[in-house]
Amino acid sequence: MFKIIDRYIVKKYLGTFSFMLILLSIVVLVIDVQQKIPRIENAKSVDPKLDLTYFLIHFYPYWIVNLVVTFLSILVFISVIYFTSRMANNTEIVAIISSGASFHRFAKPYLYTSIFIALISLTINHLVLPWANIKKNELEAYTYNQRNKDKILGTAPASAQLSKTEYIFVNSWNKRENRGSGFIFQRFDKDRRMTYELKSSEVYWDTQKKQFVLNNYFEKTINKDDTEKLGNGFELRKSYGHTPQELFPNELLGQNKTTPELLKFIEREKEKGNSNLNSYLNELYQRTSMPVSIIILTFLALSLSSQKKRGGLGINLAIGISLAFIFVFSFEALKVVSENKSMSPALAMWFPNLVFLPITLYLYLKRANQ
Image (cartoon, rainbow, N blue to C red):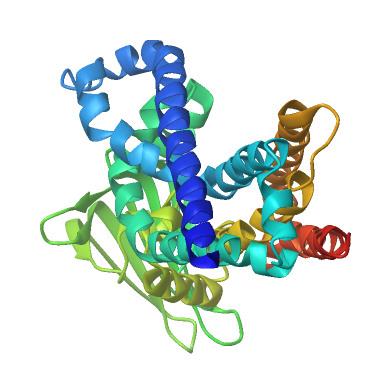
C-alpha cells in the first residue's frame, strides 16, 4: 500500500514541478524578450547578424538553463506547497496518516525526490551550467544597459598582477576587440626594487598564436649596480601565460568554468592578489549550496502545507511565495555583502541554508508530533 502512495506522491511532486518549470520558462522568456528588444536591435549596429532571431537561437536557450538553475529550489518549494496543500484540502493526508503511517513515513517520498532533484542540480551546476554560460555570455553583454555593457565590452584602464613581483598596466583596454594603448609591464626583486620595465604605445592579442603583440615598444633592464640596459623596436611578441580574459577578468568569467577549472583559476588569482576574488568564490560555493537548499525547502514546504488551514491553498501559496522571495533576495544581497568583503563568501552563500535549516527542523518536528 505504502509503495503505491509513495509512487503517487513522487508523481505529484515531479508532475507539478515540471509544469511549474515549463510555465516559468515560457512566461519569463516572453517578458525578457519584450523588455530587451530595443537593446538587441542596438546590437545590430555592431554586427548585422545580431538580430532577434539570432538571440532566440544562440542566446535564450542557454539563458533559460541559467534561469532554471537559479530558481530551481524556489520552483521546488512552490511546487511542493501547491500539490501538498491540495492533498491536505482533499483530506488525502489525513487518510494516509489514519491508515497507520507516521508523518515521517509519509515524508519519505518527499526526501527521496528532493535528493534526486538536488543531485541532478549539483551535477548541472558543477559540469553542465558552465558550458551553457559560455554560450550565454558571448551575447549577454548586448542585453545590458549601456553602463553595464561597457563594463564587459567597453574601453577602460586595466591591470593585472602576474605574480608577487610582476605587474601589467594598460592605460586603455577594449575588452571586445582585445586591443589597447599605453601598455606597461614591470618586474621587481624581493626588495621591491624595479629590475625590468617594458612599455609600448599599442598592444593587441593575437588569437591564433595566443600572444600579446606590442607595437613601438621600449624596454629597460636595471642591473644590480643601477646601470641600465635600454632597447626598443617596432614589434615585440610576448606570452604572459594567460589570455586577456584571464588577465583582465570580468564578473562573468567565473560562470564559464567547470568547478575543477574554477578551483585552479581561484588558486591562480590568489597568487596574483586579485582584489575581485570574492565574486568567483561566491560562484564556487553557490554551486553546492543551492542544490542543498532544494532538500531544506522541500521539507519546509511540506511542514507548512501538509495540514488543512483556513484559507486553504491560497494562504499556503501566499506564504510560500513570500518565503521564496526572501530566500532569493537574501542570496543576491549576500553576494553584494561578500563582494564588498563584509562577509566571507563561504558564509554568505551558505547563510540562507543555515538560517532556514533550524526553522525547517522546528516546523517539521512540530508537524510530525501533532
